[in-house]
Length: 128
Image (cartoon, rainbow, N blue to C red; front, side):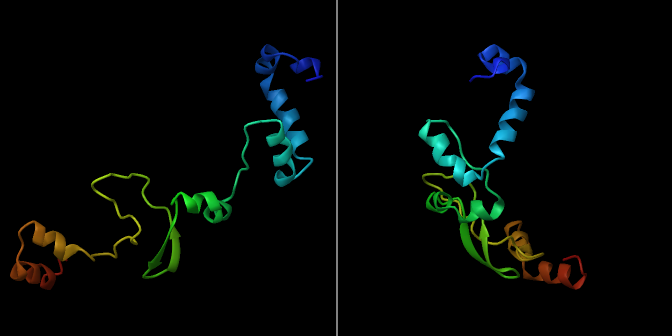
């Protein structure tokens, strides 16, 4: 506020790269958890930048259902990000692991009208 280079909005916009460098240098003098109370007390819209593990363990992320725990056949217990799409009458279950290679081949072929014999022939001919 006291730096003449940035004492009005026009100057701050015109020389924003320099301003950003000054602000970044100043912010580097303390850790995020030290800055947050100061910024929030001044009603400055802010939030910490979290790494992947911090996001996954954040209480608000869990409370909002942005992650889910699944039992993965190869990876064991895993945290996944379910689909953000929610339908009122058609729920989406995206908490299952991805299918294994060929896991649903027979099911799909049956939906297209293939019977047991045709599927067995495709399997014996190594097509599936």
